Amino acid sequence: GHEVYYVDYWPKYHRQAYKAFSFGRFISLGVRSRLYYLLESIKWYKFRKQRIANFEYFLGIYIYPYCRPTTDEFDAIVYGSDQIWRKQEAIKSYNPVYFAQNRFQAHKHIAYSASMGILPSNYRDLNYLKELLSHFNAIGVREKNLKELLVKIGYTNTKLTIDPTLLLSSKDWNTIIPTTSSSTNKYVLVYGINNVAFKWR
Image 1 (cartoon, helix red, strand yellow):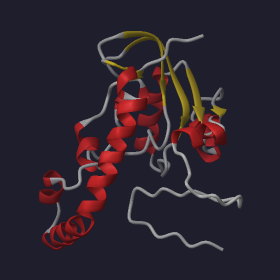
Image 2 (cartoon, one colour):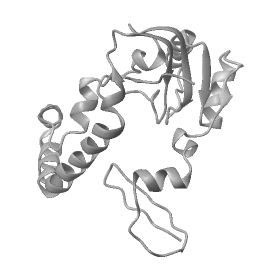
Image 3 (tube, rainbow, N blue to C red):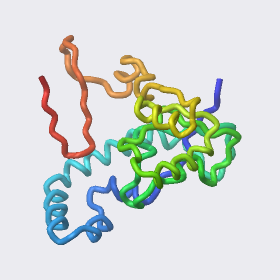
Image 4 (cartoon, rainbow, N blue to C red):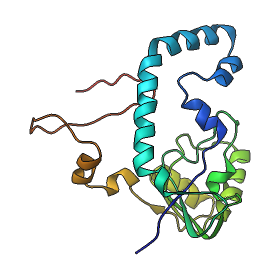
């Protein structure tokens, strides 16, 4: 019953982070780190290019056709989810845009399943966080410790909500990403965006 769009906001520092090779990141590193980054980029370049191509293909089907410019006016804008409120390394601070402190025109600003990763531990960050959150009409977070922190600083109506990826059924996911395995055994799909090794028991 709703007409739903994506608000097309993607800051430059995020675009840089998803490049197969980021010159901006390269020059920001020390000498040894530059060498390591260069070698890693060469080693994984083909894989990263393919991953970017796959991601762009997905965006072209499910995201781009439903994007609206940031200058449009909306009844409500929903912000979320994965670590949207973490301190952004590239700008050394929280991004106010993700806290509804922005130029987007909407009657209501709602956080759904927002997460932060590392919680603020100093008085300055907590005060800034309290100010940023004041722009929301409703707040839902996906982490219990984040909810407890927000309640502690005065946002007592904070709700605990599930990750949006879990709003889709397995049937929905199998339609979007068909599996080729004929096995009926249960399985867990893990997709890591960093070079992370997983150990299973």
